[in-house]
Image (tube, rainbow over the protein chains, first blue to last red):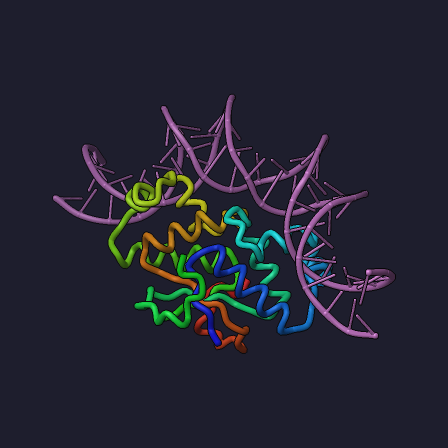
Length: 83
Length: 83
DNA sequence: ATATAATATACGTTTTAACGTATAAACCGT
DNA sequence: ACGGTTTATACGTTAAAACGTATATTATAT
């Protein structure tokens, strides 16, 4: 359930998955966070230039949080995009 | 040991802690990541505009990773900056 | 106290995120 | 197949990150 995310792409995927799990569309997240639907779209697709404040706002809107920890030897199942 | 981080400030603190734990200075992280020492400084102090790619590069250099998970009811001990 | 190392800050430049607005493209359900 | 919904993309604008370079400030050790 917890999702390892080492790249912007993985982070975007985790966000998209949770958003869908909550039955929300990008526009509604945009409303909650005062970001544009286009911005949510960019974050979910893994834009590496996404700003940290933007990301934290989206995580909050989805009731997600980060944990920072030493890298684990990847159990491949937990890492979705290998390349 | 794992660090909950919901804000840029908390993320910066976790990075600084790990960097020091590894006995490295900002310049050496800058060298590894091809970022300026000044940029590392900004990230560690919690600059909310830090870009995701920048952050991921620094985490990699420190052998850290993110986990994304549903927000927990905060055990206050795990959250360092309450305000 | 002083030298040295480490970190924070400054200034001008280039690059780019997020913006508003709009539309195009993809994805439903019926 | 079609209409509505959702997501991706476009364009010009504004704000700001990261840059190189340099220096000021703070911390650490002797």
